[in-house]
Amino acid sequence: MKLIRHPLTAVALIALTAAIPGMVQGQASGAGGSISGAVQFDGTAPAAKKLMITKDLKICAVHDKFSEELVVSPTGGLQNVFVQVLGAEGEVTIPKERPSLIQRGCQFIPHVQVIPAGSRMNIMNEDGIAHNLHTLSVENPPFNRLQPGVKKRMITKKADLVIPEIIPLKCDLHGWMNAWIIISDHPYYAVSDQEGSFEISGIPPGTYTVQFWHETLGLLSREVTVQAGADTRVSDIAFKVEEAAEEQGG
Image (cartoon, rainbow, N blue to C red; front, side):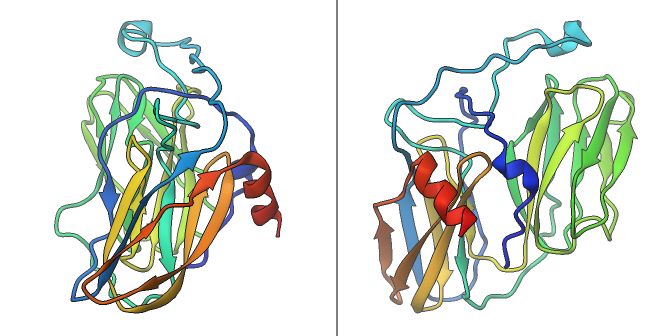
């Protein structure tokens, strides 16, 4: 998968927030090895940025909300980093159960989600008020669709999410709502959890470039050798603003 760098990834809107627990893993098949590790934020994380809620307050302002653009744990773990193994051959399987993006309390859940290329998604509205789904895709056709409060589920079209790309998503009716949908053409990926941890399994033996993407900090990469039946631990992944900017610019 060639990483599509959307211009919004360079916007320096950095904040800390409470994390949605859980780690997303690529569903690789067959025998192989694995890569695991923990992504760290090198430095002092900025204070949480509270979002200004200006509309539909009875639904959207029940609890305080904070930006998810930079989520760092007390131990320095960096959440929502997209990790992928470049060059490993693997079949992309469309899941029988559609991936879902949930609108709950006027937030998108999850904030970063990876789906196999060609998947269709369930867009769930649990709020009972209108939302507007607006993708800012470059390679795929962007869509801008209203989802009324009475429509609990909306399904993306077959042509919406086909080409590998990192797609920003927003709600035009609630300006603080944003998320990322990442389309992958291989099964070797993960999204770091609330402690920055990730694991990718079923990787064919070989030496690969492992790429780490964060929406505000940019790109890092490491060369990793995978052995059959063994886990390769990557322990030196720490995002510095300067280092990430240099790699992204190069």
